[in-house]
Image (cartoon, rainbow, N blue to C red; front, top):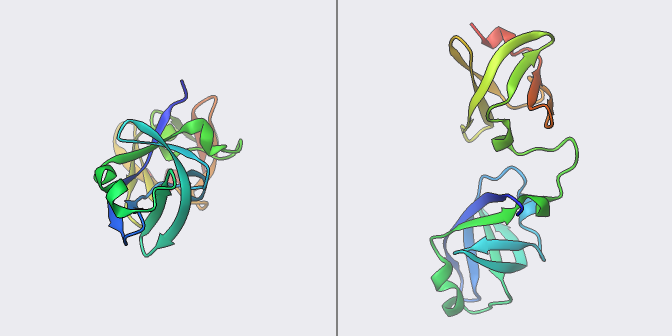
Length: 162
């Protein structure tokens, strides 16, 4: 079975036409919240039939349910999608896949990723060897992630390891 990935949580309804208001900090929202994608909500599969964005929320209609009374039972649940449905390219990866990865800068082993933290500006990888430090997951520090070998190659990160 394909791995399920958490993509958000339905926090309320929006309007009277059956849209679910979803809060999501998922890194590939545009791939997860697409019309036609199948999501898992309250342990049931549902097809996304419309998507739009409003402020910090994703407004989702499922199964063509176009009445608030039909979707009230889906409020308060996490939304999941099968990882294969995201159709990630070879260079794309989920931040949660970094957990347990070895971190290298050139030939220097910096430690293992133990946690991913969202500080609402960007994501940070907590790396631990003898002591812990944080690496921002942005282009200034990340060269690439070898998914198969589970190795995160960095640049400028050794200066963070004080």
